[in-house]
Length: 264
Image (cartoon, rainbow, N blue to C red; front, side, top):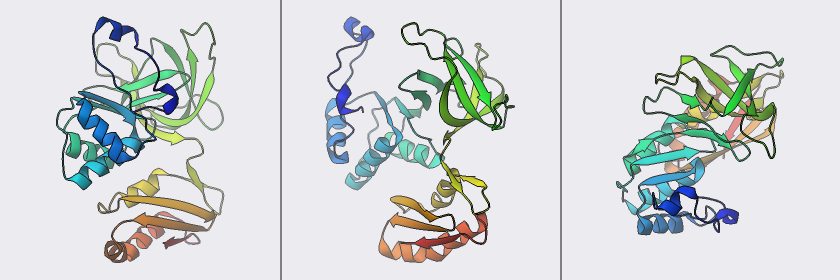
């Protein structure tokens, strides 16, 4: 899946030698159309943003069908949670290899078959992991990722702040390269909710709570003020009523007492 602007791109180097086929689908199309194109093309590898894969999985569920031809799914662009992986395995029954990268820098880290984090591409990029004060962070600490491209000559990126927060895993990868690993990608540096006392709560907390309710199709959290949040849920109305009090209780346990939540 890709943006409309990239649909007209020609073949890449390896395609000219017939090494593989590639088919681009506009990710602005309705999910049902994207699924139709996928079924028509019958791909073996699927590369896309997490949100669009999620939408397609929901469409597969609506049709009550599975697609078991895939050998590999490459989700990225957003934080991949265990709930996403569970859904991908259910629909596609394929190996999952998460990646982390940007338009400017390309792929920066990738998941290996050992599934012990995302291995950094240290042969192409120099990485710095900095704490809130700009000092080197230790493994296991939340840090800001700053990168220097070791191959760019036309437009060098030197100490380029990705504006992403990550956690570096202790120790090197388990393969022969011995490169460092990201334990997890936590998201953008502004993906945090500000509390009344000025402290921050990462957005993962919202997902951890909502992921407990498997019959929720989609949800949205709107912070109306530092003390008031609205929770919009897409699910069966009777199901929403049945989980309403439990959701409020779960949020109350994770947030300060003066923060109020309302399920819409």
